[in-house]
Image 1: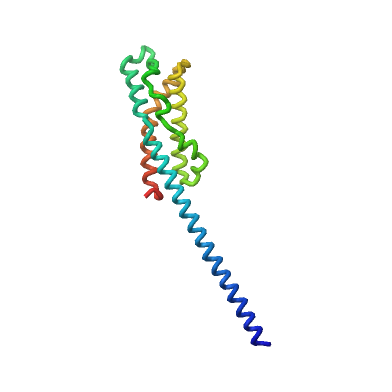
Image 2: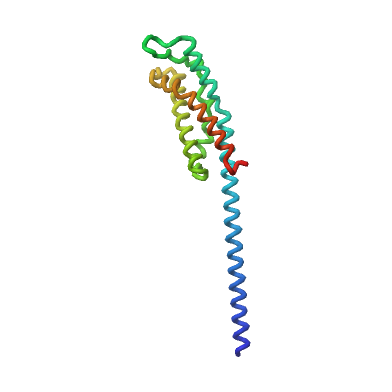
Length: 173
């Protein structure tokens, strides 16, 4: 009986060792595939955002703001003239669809990237609302126009910096 017990024990340990080895290999492979897909998602999201950022034509808005100031100098109170709605490009020249459709996926990026992206797009969406208000002749408030004048150049700098940040991220290379 003793040889039969040894054969059963040997069979059980072989099955158990094979099972554990298969489990470990499957686990390592699954984690590897998950990490690879996550890296690909990050790269795809960064590239999409870069593409959208490069399409945004903030220079046209800056030129429109600057041309209104050079055409009519500020009054005695230092107030700038009202912006000419016909000179401002439509807010659609500042696309945000990729950002809005992927806002829930931003968490896969680094916290610094997310902070920069959200900060930039929050400012951009505010400026787009002001542009829409000016262009729709709803009599935008002077404070809104002043905010557009004050922030649009900074927003362009922020956009350029964000593109650089996303291009230099580890996963994009």
